[in-house]
Length: 139
Ligand code: ZN
Image 1 (cartoon, rainbow, N blue to C red):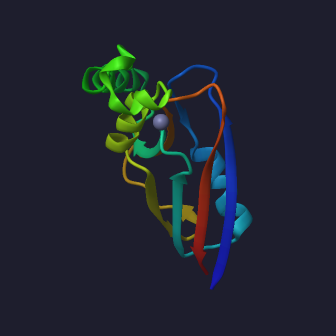
Image 2: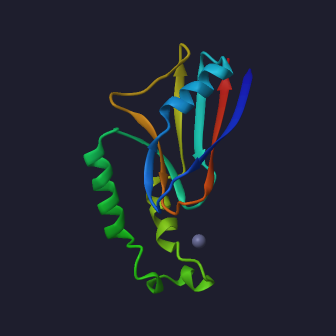
């Protein structure tokens, strides 16, 4: 069995943002030379997500509005977590609902996606360097 591990680094220039990281994951898959197996992609921070959905800008702005309704950033005093001196309680909640990781099957050396599926990094407390782990196992 082959095993491959890589950390991808991102620095989103605003507090929140979505990045399509499918090309980076495909590069990892090529480097791994795995033809049949699984890839795990997870955010290594508790205020960021990795999720799969459509690369459609209207949908992404809908996510932004929906998440801001569920867990508004302000007023920051509404969250007990922010009593620690942080201001990112909303980011922890947004991460929780958008998820930590995805697993994708690898078939014949390719990511075995359903229609329109793409992998995204979701940032909810940006403007600093953060990591995504890519782990591939198979043969
Ligand atoms: Zn925090």
